Length: 140
Image 1 (cartoon, helix red, strand yellow):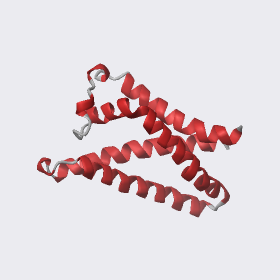
Image 2 (tube, rainbow, N blue to C red):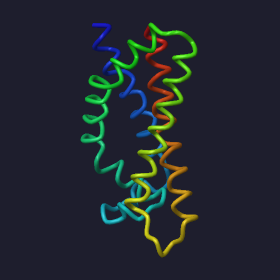
Image 3 (cartoon, rainbow, N blue to C red):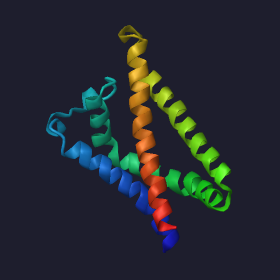
Image 4 (cartoon, rainbow, N blue to C red):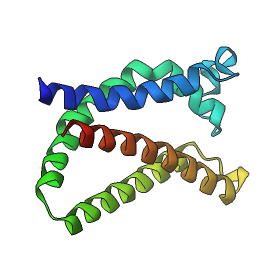
């Protein structure tokens, strides 16, 4: 039961907080599916609104297949290795955020827009993984 809770609760908590942020924003009812990919906060919120079930399933699979083995290793290692693993997770978040940002970036908008998109996407991922690891720590 505890193992199941470690797989379900962290993604559920992270998604619940993001859902509350999107759902109770002032633009929630104005979000349209054709706004996805515009590279701004509103398009990210539209993507999140319409793809939530799929994103949650991906989060559960990621939690089960990647996060839990890393977490078990993290619990059993020294403090230096823990810090190294957390830095590695942040690096992976930045690389994935750059990939997503580069995909939706339009070169006509300039490199400054790419940097802002990368920072935003990195922030979203770091917040999600911080919540995830904090919940796992509390469950341990």
